Image (cartoon, rainbow, N blue to C red; front, side):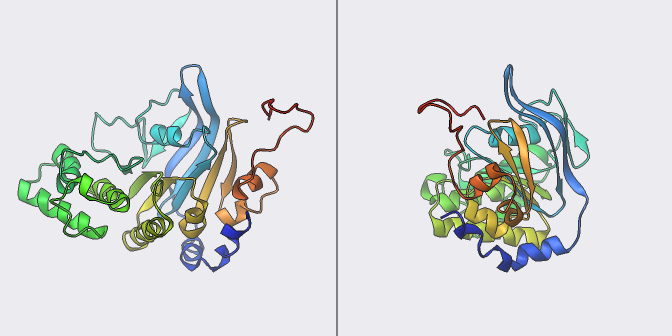
Length: 279
């Protein structure tokens, strides 16, 4: 079962073409970062870069800190140990100025009492001085960009799960960022809708040159569109792999191979049944 998702990765021409374009400068830089809350530490000494125009994935098992890391990258949690630098800016303060990125939160996080168009307009109203008619025009253009032409006046409750994710991406693109963070974009979607969303992300990356940082557990999506991924390990509280997905799947580290082969964490054979694995 584990080999199936990455057997065809060699045929992934779009991702290979982007990698063949050569290394680009980093748009996100993380150095010796510790994440968690109070005395609870999820990950320690995280160090990695995200390069311009990459589709970059943050992977890891449940509880490894993937979504928490995203909160630190986007300024929702203050950095107290280590460095997070996004487009040359450290210590992002979302209350202090224009955010240098867009964010799609898990499940879309659309406001149910507002129309889809009003949801997309929110960042424009908050951060720009555009007149109302220009804001409306931009919102409609962003919805058209993600395949939701005609959804401007609808409410989120009238949309399918995949359409809600597309609307959330349209909102993330409202301020014309060149960097977008996506938290579990395929969660809760059927395989066909998930593949269609992958196609949208790939198209936006290729046509607009957008950089995407994606938290996900969907390996099929990872092998389809991701250029490079990191893998967070819950037990060691560390980053244990960094590279193209097809290379990570063949890693010498059994923990990395087990993740990509969807195998449970290895247990100490001397441990009694029901005893947590100390590693």
